[in-house]
Length: 94
View (tube, rainbow, N blue to C red):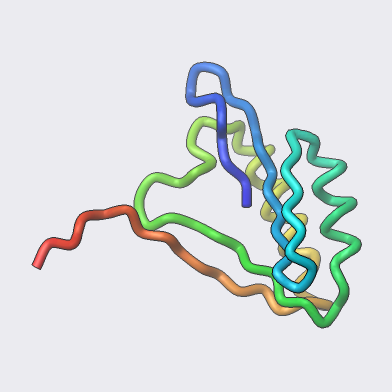
């Protein structure tokens, strides 16, 4: 997961990688460290890519940074199953 923990005025990327199989959670602001941890995920482990239904968590981050994150996940498609999940924070309006 990639989020902007700094807001629009002072964007700051936070990369979060959780591995259910090992119950390990890695958080870093360093893209190279994030990619290193991604490369260590065994091939039989599915990778979940989280999003939100409204405002993206990457709002305010530079487009190139967001694209690089997406490219890093997409690069794993040949060896891993990529699962796309969304979280919705909208109120239920029946």
